[in-house]
Image 1 (cartoon, rainbow, N blue to C red):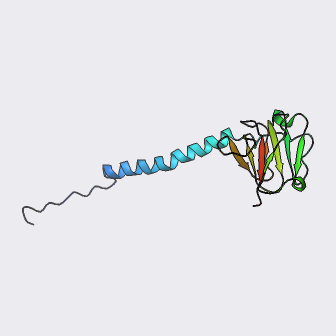
Image 2: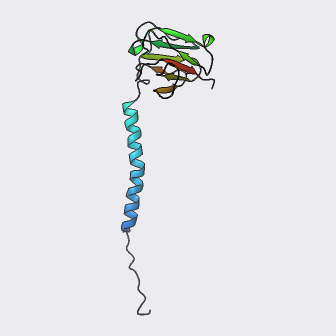
Image 3: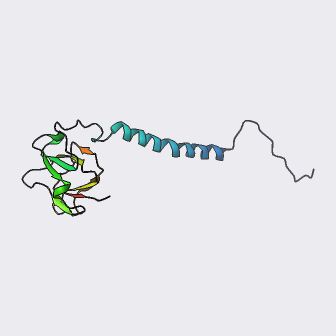
Length: 145
């Protein structure tokens, strides 16, 4: 061997410090999203734990209620009386606080009575129930897909 050549000692059972840092980073990349997912499941959504309305919403209808938890006089909008993908105003004499989408189509619920997206809105799949809206629902749009 030349006097300039050096041999690094071989150590069994040791890892470089860069491996440990990379390994820890990779673990956190897995653990943090998993914790967020578990927290989301634990908190849940109002839809998952809602008690069904006393009177079921008819097939092909969107049912709105003036009070939370499907209380008060139900107002039904059927597919026969609405046009798909058109803005339909809900009853203006009451504030809609809960609803059931049983139309067989996705429905977007709007805070604005003219379906303006500048106010609050959200789309709900068919079969969804919302026992508490975060805003007063004033209009809907039933989608064809």
